[in-house]
Length: 61
Image (cartoon, rainbow, N blue to C red; front, side, top):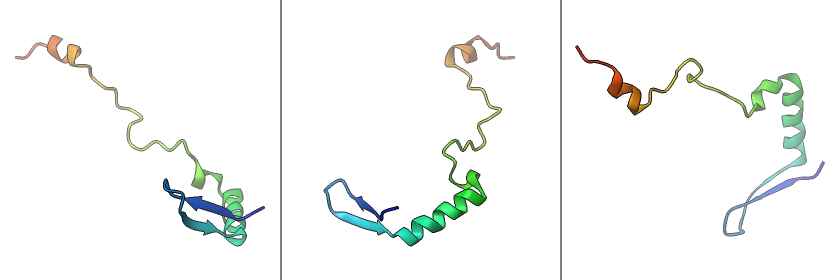
């Protein structure tokens, strides 16, 4: 494994992630793979959006 260099949009070095830090992250991911999951969903599972056309069809009493 090699160290990771992170650059900004101007090409300047922002930070370097050491091999030690990468190995620690690797161990954490092995122990609990859900920590680094990209498919996180928060609070929008059961909701369904109502389109503006459907709102206009609902009769108001």
